[in-house]
Image (spheres, rainbow, N blue to C red):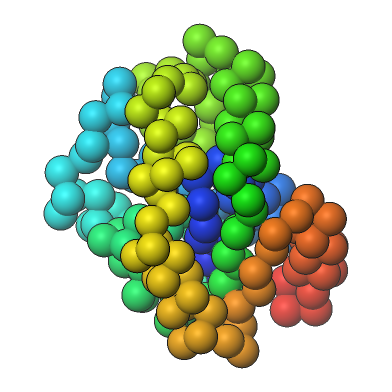
Length: 175
C-alpha cells in the first residue's frame, strides 16, 4: 500500500503516518526530515528532492508524510493508493502544536531532522494560523481532492482520523 499524507501544519500528519506505517509494517518518510537539516536549516532544493525521489524509487509500499510541493508531490499523488488530506481547523492545529511543543520541549521529535529542537515560536504560530492557510494553499488541497477524487480522503476531526486508520490498517491490500 502507498499512502500520501498531506495537509495543514499541526494537524497530526506525522503521528498518523508513523502509526499507519507501524501497523502496516511499511516504511515511512517524514518530509520534514528531508526538507530540514540541523537547526531548522533548509536543505538544498535539489538534494531534498533527490532524497524524496530515492525513497519512492526503493520502496514498493510506503507512507509519506508532508505536503512539500517541490519534493515529488505530483509523483507521490500519482503513485499513492490513498491520499489523506488533513484539513483540521486552525484552532485545532494550534492546540495540537502547543501540546506537541510541551511534550517535546527542548528535544527533537522522532519525525524531525536531527538537531531541530521542537519550538512553538511566533513565526511558526503565524504559519499555523495564517501563512500556511492562504487561498493558494486551500486551492491546492481542493485540486488534489478533485484530481484524485477516487483515492482521496479528507479528515477534519480526530474521530475521522481514527476511523480511517482502522480501515487502512485492516485493509486486505496491506497484508
